[in-house]
Amino acid sequence: MNILVVDDARDMQLILRRILTLMGHHVVLADHGEAAWELIQQQHFQLVISDWVMPFMDGPTLCRTIRAASLPHYVYIILLTGMSGKQNLIQGMEAGADDFATKPIVREELEVRLRAAQRVLDLEHRLEDKNRHLESVNHSLSAAQRLIQSDLERAAVLQTGVLPSQKNFGRVSVDWFFQPAQYIGGDTFNYFPLNDDLFFFYSIDVSGHGIASALLSMCLQTLLSATSELHCLTELNAEAIANVPSRLAARLNQHLHEKLDTGDHYLTMIMGVVDTQQERLHFVQAGHPQPFLYTPGTSGLVQVECTGFPIGLLPEVEYETISVPFPSGSRFVLYSDGLLELPTAHDELLTETGLLQALQASIGQPVNTLIEPLRVQLGLDQAVQTRPDDISLLIMELH
Image 1 (tube, rainbow, N blue to C red):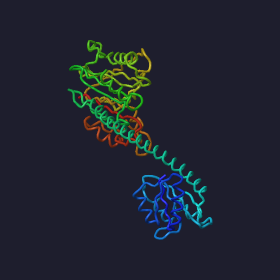
Image 2: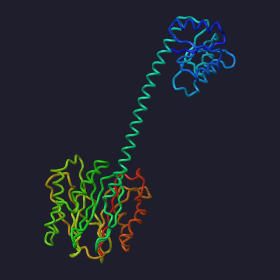
Image 3: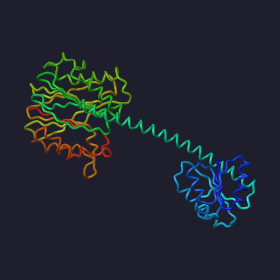
Image 4: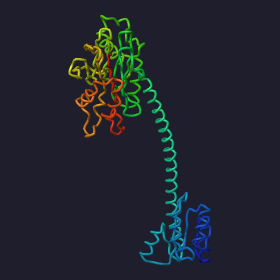
């Protein structure tokens, strides 16, 4: 070991240097604490053997100085003293000494204490190695976490980017709100005209959260796109249109079972077609929250009582198309169940009744002005800590 001996007595310095050198250690001498501290800042000493009483800076003060410093390595300190008594030992330990030796020095005793010091220093060295390894691992993990977060942020932009931006299609106007529980989520929706008279739409909530749910929702965007073979465009005629939603839901369900490995994921959905010529709405409900419907001449919005089996749970499930009048001025509201998990100002969860009342109050307003007041009234922009699920809200109106 590289040992620093600190003592104002020259004979004690020489005795210790002789003993320690014979033991195979490298020894440097200092006359007092201040000189020792200067050397400690310049060299790497594993062990300091210091006298207690010295001029300029005594042994306990040197201990406190070493312990207060941010040295890159641990320094083991043995205090030499001719003093006895419990109080002196306590004072030395409080100053930061690791061990004590009494004068006059006995070689065998010193050798035992040095072996104990070596064990402690070896442990400290192994601990430093482990800490360096952990620091390297933490650095790698932090870099990986930053990369994942950056990827998720880009994925969130991409997921939002596939949602429709156009909100007016002839006689149909649409507005929507979307907010994933995390960076990305399993909620998705889309709408587009199939021809001059038929307007297609869907709202989907994939079970679970995170990457797997988001990837499945993105896949569904492709499966239900305007060019998808699942649509069977040859069936889009006045006689068959009422059955298109139920047939498409069945085809999608079968496709998920035969073509995709969705694991434990499934999805709830409302999907349908607005026939603007016949002014009728045809849709299928597959486990999604029951939608709200308003038609002119009625007392207001009503919740359409309908049920259906989620997509992707069981193969060969049959679905039923629901057909209702949808004259000019009608409004159809779709939403995911994450909306009903939002806490209100009274720390209660938003209910379907509360949502219905908020939507009812906006009946007289144009559809393209509804989202902003609902955003404030329902607290749609709540922080992620209070938003346990993805939120999507889709409002359609026929002019």
